[in-house]
Image (tube, rainbow, N blue to C red; front, side, top):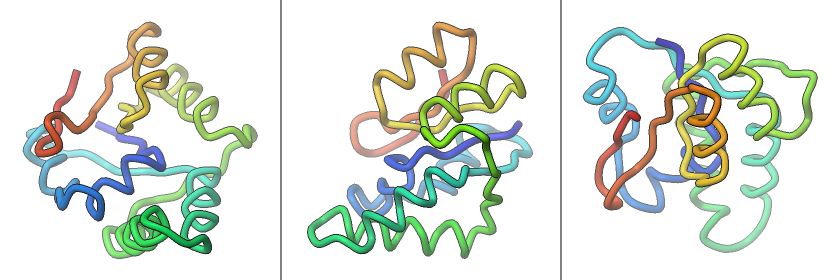
Length: 125
C-alpha cells in the first residue's frame, strides 16, 4: 500500500500527540510506503517560518519527514490537494488527511482515506 501524506496530517503529532507512524502500522496491518509531495513540503516550510502554534507543528512535521524517510514526489500540479487527488486516482495512493473536502473528493472517486478520529487514533475508510 502506498500512502500520501497531506500537510495537515503531518501537523497531527505536535497538535494531538499522536504517533502517526505507529498508528499507520496498526491501521494498515501490512507493508506500506509513505510519500508526500513538493507542494506539501513548501506549505510545511512556509508554516515553519511563521509564528504561532502551526509553526511548531510544521517544524515537527518536517523533522518527521526526514527521520522517517518519507519520500517526496515531484508533481506538475502546484496545488497540493489537486496533486494528491490526481495521485490517488491515477496511481491508487491512499490519502492521509484531515481535510474534509479532500476526504470527500477522494472517497467520491473510489479512493481510500486515512484520518484521525476522536483526536486519538487513525482510521482507514
